[in-house]
Amino acid sequence: MQTRVLAGAISLTAMVGLTACGDDGSSSGGSGDGDQIELTIGTFTEFGYEDLLKEYERLNPGVKITHHKTGQGGPYHQQLLTKLAANSGLEDVVAIEEGHIPDVLDKPHLFNNLGDIGPEDVTPDRWLPWKVEAATAKDGTWIGYGTDIGPLAMCYRKDLFDAAGLPSDPEAVKPLFETWESYFEAGDTYAEKTGKAWYDSNSQIFNAMQNQLETGYLDKDNKLAMESNADIRKNWDMVTAAGSRGQTAKLVAFSPEWNNGFKQGAFATKTCPSWMLGVVEEQAGPDNAGKWAVTDAFPGGGGNWGGSFLAVPKQSEHPEEAAKLAAWLTAPEQQIKAFQKTGNFPSQVDALSSPELLGFTNEYFGGVKVGELYAAQANKVEKAQYKGPGDGKIQENATSPALQAVEQGTKSADEGWQQAVDAAKRIAG
Image (cartoon, rainbow, N blue to C red; front, side, top):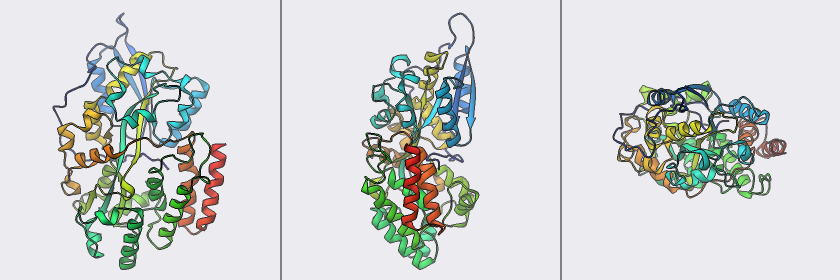
């Protein structure tokens, strides 16, 4: 299952006045002899780049950009790895999701070091330190400029909480979401009183819990850690037990049934990385405006789920121009514009501290200052989770299918765990 999927836009008011940092992209992008340079960029799902790429072309009349956009992240990254191995067919700029960046960190020789070819004034200190860390190979190669991030908060249905006799004010609900134990305890209360599900799926909850650990499915020696890291199994047991007590709606994320679940009130809470707000608003629809709320409380203190990077493969015939485009797309003012379009939350420090971002309120979620809320959540993340090669594939093709099998009753929790471990071993090699 993808960790980053955007299906709609948050309705945002225009944000203006952010001072551009460094190169504004207004100089000619030509090669110096009057010839036009053709650049290609590959992305998946929604990055909010359509209008930005047109703007870049206007600012740089010597540059023509072709955008290759893929709907799903899984197939996109598989093709990326295939083209990397073939040393042919990749775009000048490629997007890489945070769950898949480990798949290329051990191949730094196939990418340009952005610290060498990028604009001189684009330095790592523009980004949150952990965002840069996540895209830096062991040999020091800076593979990707950070695009968005996915700081975690919790969304919930106020009306459904009221009906179950639970507190519904964003401040009053915080004790319910303090720890995973308190979260599942509240879920038991809700399920017992209403006979309805507390959350959408075991997989969505487990993925959030997994992203809070210091290392992912592999340890720092890139060895599979599912059996050696007791916290992974502990999280598995907690969520499958909660699901067995009626807390899960058993809905596959981003399926038609899951989409419809937002409209029907099929679940009362939703793990909400920043990019999820747009998904909730689109799928729940205008009839549910004001019923959904978001709070900065999150079990275990929060974390990050999602976000991507822009990299320049060695295959590019115009690496410096490609790096210039990637730098411009990830500059603070462009990150704010992408946030306006899709809800992708900025990863650059200046964007996170801008009054325009911090003062932004979302009326669909009751007028809460979501810019300030998610900026605070982002600043709580101290370091990037270490993810080894294949981490994203393990989530998509090992743990998520096994958790679904447990939900559907075709596997016990122990059998599902073994299914996940066996599949992970095949992926990790």
